[in-house]
Image 1 (cartoon, one colour):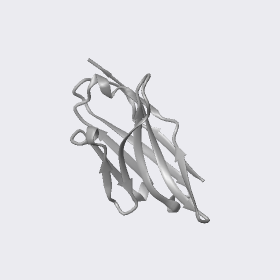
Image 2 (tube, rainbow, N blue to C red):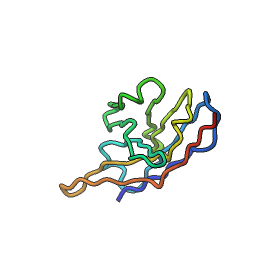
Image 3 (tube, rainbow, N blue to C red):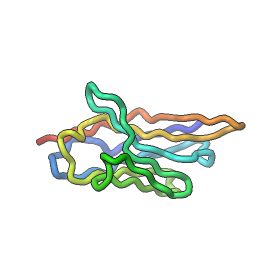
Length: 119
């Protein structure tokens, strides 16, 4: 199993920045990629960015420019830097990990961290 814990959310004014953290534990060596997603009230969960074990990153078109995903392998932690925050960035931010075991593929999710941007 892989467990994920997000942190770093909070209340921030528009124009500010936040760095969210996603700490992985358990079978971390089996992780292929970790992604950040968000879900705003009344909306579907949407992908923001992913980072593979190789270090390769992918961003949703809407996330290019203000969002940066990075990782610290020694800490088994993936970060999401969000700059120039806007009220529409208000959402619960989740990370997920895609991992493998015994020929099967699995996905684990964290519990989410709330980001609220005031205007």
